[in-house]
Image (cartoon, rainbow, N blue to C red; front, side, top):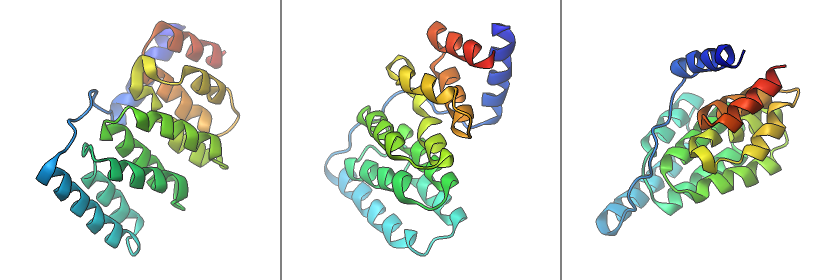
Length: 172
C-alpha cells in the first residue's frame, strides 16, 4: 500500500513544478542594489498587473536572495486576493533560499482564514526536508478541505519514513 501511495504521489509531483534544493548565495554590493531595483520595478508594476502578469513577475524574483524580496513575497502570500498568486509567491519564497522563510510561511499558515490560502502556505513547506514542520503538515493533511492535498504533497516532498508513514495513515 505504501509503495502504491508513494508511486501515485511521485507521478503527481512529476507533473507539478519541483523546487531544486539548496540555498542561493547572499547578494552584496551592486548585486544587492540591482535586486532591490528589480523589486522596486515589480512593486510598481504589481498594482496594475493581471493575474498572468503577477505570476510572471513572481518568476523574475526566484532565487534572488535579497531580504526585501522575501518580505515582499510574504506580503503577497498574506494579502493577494488570488490563492494561485499566493501559492506561486510561496513557491518563489521557498526558492528564495532563506531558511527563515519557512518559519514565515508557518506564521502565515496560522493566520490564513481560507482553505485555499492555507493550501498556498502548506504546499511547498516539504522542500525544507527534515527541517519541514512535520507536525503542522500532519495536522493539515487530515483536514477536510483543499489544504489537505497541499499538505500531503508537502509530506511527499519531505521523503522521510516518518512523512511516508503519515501519508499512509492519512490515506486509510
